[in-house]
Length: 376
Image 1 (tube, rainbow, N blue to C red):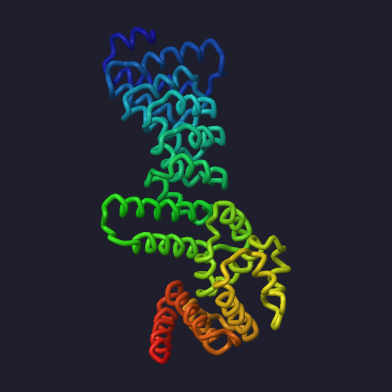
Image 2 (cartoon, rainbow, N blue to C red):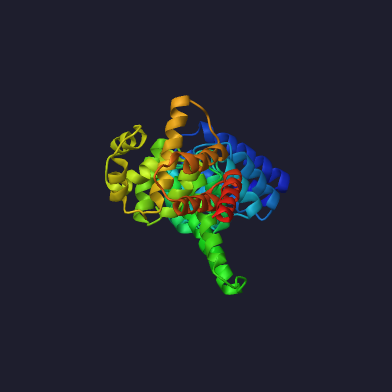
């Protein structure tokens, strides 16, 4: 009877038949002879020459589960305007069928899987490991996807040169600090390469500006980190030779003392709590020995010491001090609080503040340096 209807009926008759057959599925027992007969007819309807019949069938079946794999994949293989809405909405896809679409389907079908709210862990891993960047971008846009740190690292390792992925990664609050720092480094390298190739710079100022921008960006990332994140990222900075004297001086001038004490701990090999005790204990005679173990240039010593003195005063007063105010107090400490250092050393320290500080302390240090030079 079904065959007669299919052969003789028009589009409306076949759509009605599809509706009746689809309505039968929820009440039928999987594997039964009756169900096998109905599924065979549905597969035939799913390949009907008339688009409106196939479209109507796909719409009706999208709300039914379970569905046989042959029927599912017949619809999924149809034209995009039929297959894609079905892929996006059907509840009948299991994890293995989703994986099959990811492995053998084209890009637009993979995107539908990446966007599904019921996406499984196996599919997430498959996308992260093997899919092209548009599918990974679709996964990152999926609110059901909650990346682990390893997911972020794999995506960045694969797509560090793909702006659509990088922008999505950087927009997330829980992305590992390491990735933000690596991206700052990568950006500065691209800028340096551009300057080298374009011959825009006739002296070495270009390299200095790029390095300054990189370290400023890195310090901004570190300033927004909590202590657990800092504890994790400092060994990475040390291993990658990014824990530079200039980065440490920048941190000292703007008051990022959580970074300073962890940097000195990493460089010296002394446990963090012990370092913090040495740094912030008024009148501690052991800071020089700690500093010497860090292998930093001698010129860093007095600036870090000035920053420590400012930090100790702030802790005692309980004030909340901005980076500008901290840097200004570092200048005051250099001029009035550091006993026993020569004027040429103070001028060098003011040069550090003028180079590494924020706007206000930079201006103060520059004016003082100019005044002292004229007086000399």
